[in-house]
Length: 81
Image 1 (cartoon, helix red, strand yellow):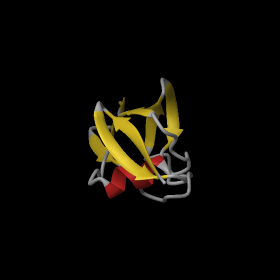
Image 2 (cartoon, rainbow, N blue to C red; image 1 turned 90 degrees about the horizontal axis):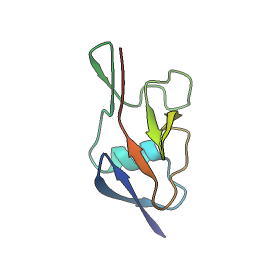
Image 3 (cartoon, one colour; image 1 turned 45 degrees about the vertical axis):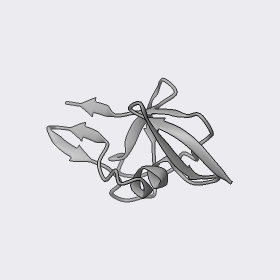
């Protein structure tokens, strides 16, 4: 079964049970956060490093590698100094 999420307004398709990070990677996004002027994405993939944090449905600091995507999720980039 497939699901759809939006990432910064772009509609992306993924599979039911897939993480947000997995959907972003599968759709060609390698980075989706900026910290200290550098682009970040998935680094450890197990929720420890926090490089993959995004805002999901208005909630900041969600680890994209850990959060299972749900139909209609609205995902946005985070920028941290």
